[in-house]
Image (tube, rainbow, N blue to C red):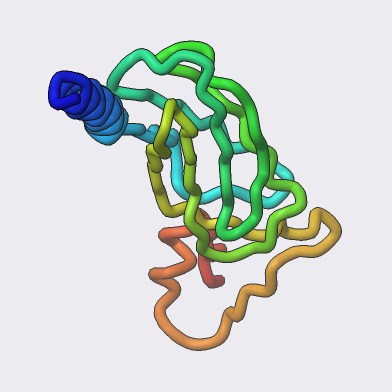
Length: 148
């Protein structure tokens, strides 16, 4: 009876050890998000380089902008370029988050992005020309004709 009990304890300990090592291996991995820029117009796509610290097989990746899930796909390699559409996302500052579901845990990578509405092509911004010596306008490419 005690031999069976000892065998069960050893088996339980080995299973516990394997689960612990598996979880610690998943938790030791990281996800890095590389962006070319951090400000985008609404309607563009964000080209996101997602890099993991180790090979993760058959992992699902969910990309969130703020609280909205934008895209879901499977990870094919340790470095993968993902095109994230932002046509239906609200403007403003938001958190870009990639959640990799690997094995028994989740690995999360985060980055801040700003999304702005595209200016209307049918209108021109108003420039106020009053006062000053014109230094601001010279810096922005305007010239003042010489006075006669």
